[in-house]
Structures are given as C-alpha cells and as structure tokens.
Amino acid sequence: MLPEVESLLIVQNRDQKINTVQQNLAKIPRDKARAEDKLSKDKKAVADAKTAYQDNEVAIKNLELDIATRRDTIAKLKTQQFETKKNDEYTALGNEVIRYTEMVDELETNELELMEKADELKASHSKAMEALALTQKEVNKDIADLDEKANQNKERLQELQSERAELVKAVDGSLLALYDRLLKSKGDDPVAPLKGSQCGGCHMKVTASTVVAVQSEKSVAQCENCGRILYC
Image (cartoon, rainbow, N blue to C red; front, side):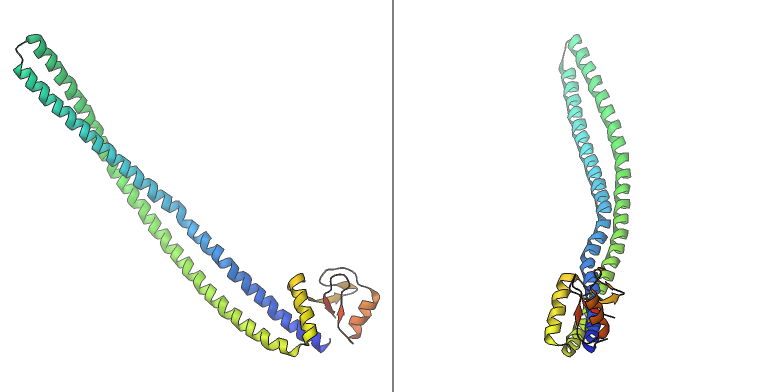
C-alpha cells in the first residue's frame, strides 16, 4: 500500500470516530427531550386532579351560599308568619317554610357528598403529586447522565480532532484537499478498498487499467465512477 494512502486511512479512521462522536452529541438533545416527555403525563394528571379538587371546592361554596340564602328566606317567612293575623296567609307561609326547609335539607345532603368527594379528590391530587415527584427524580437522573455523556463526548471529540490535526501533517497538501472534498461528498469512506474489480465504496466495477494502477501501487488511483481513492 502506498504510504500516502496508508496515512489517509489513518486520518479516515479518526474522521470516522469524529463522526460517530458528533452523532452521539447530536442525539443528546433529542434524548433529553424524550426524558422530559416522561413528565408530561404525570404533569397532566396533577393538573387534572388539582382542577377537579378546585371545581369541587367552588361547588361546595356555591352550595353554602344557596343554603345561607334559603335559611335567610326561611327566617323572613317565619317572621311574616308570626306577624300575620290571617289563617290562610299563616298556612301559606308555613308551607313555604316547609318547602324551603326541604330545599335546605337537600342542599345540605349534596354538600356532605361534595365534602366527602373533596377528601377523595385531595387524596388523588396527593397521589398524583407523589407520582410526579418520583418521575421527576428519574428524569433528573436521566438528564444528569446525559450531561455527563455529553461532557465525555466533547472531551473525546477534542482528543480526536487534535490527533487528526497531527496526522494530516504527514499527508501531501493536494492529496489532503482531494480527500477532504471526497469526505464532504461521499461520507466517511473517501478511501475505499478495491475488491476484485469493484470499488469498495460505490460497489461499481472499475476498469482494468484502474485495477492495475491500484495493484501496482505506483501512484494514487481513484474509482472512475465515484472518485474514491482506492487501495488494496
């Protein structure tokens, strides 16, 4: 193998590792987003439980106001009943007192049911909060692990880039320029093996003269189909 091609293969190895590390770094923000998504269901459960509890509290307060209003009406009816001297009016007022009293009894029954429900809703909210706290703890650990992974990959990337900077010093400038162009256009394998009479990169058959040029190892040869630098 030509020494310059061998040098390029070493550079390519570093570039492939650099690419892998960069891909790992690119995945981390997505992995963090997926970790945060774990919280969405629990956050919604907490919000729904809180809303249900608050709505129930509002309903209780409304009932309390209705009960107070009707009790006030009962008190006024009893006062009117006490002051009237007409039997039919007294009886009618008494019937109204009975009707409003029954309404109060029904409202108080509804209030008790809502108060019992309030205990259940409060417990559900507390349970949802506990589940959220547990999930948050897990997510925090996931995020911390991802941050550590990011730091490790950044350090590794710096090491590889430093190694590459040293390795390219051993490569001819024009050959390195060719390699870099191929690296951008062909991906991370601009230097590919010749497999029989096929390019190991594009898998197309090369000409006999190209096969001879690669095998003779007298000069750098390229695949006439994709342009990759070939070696055997």
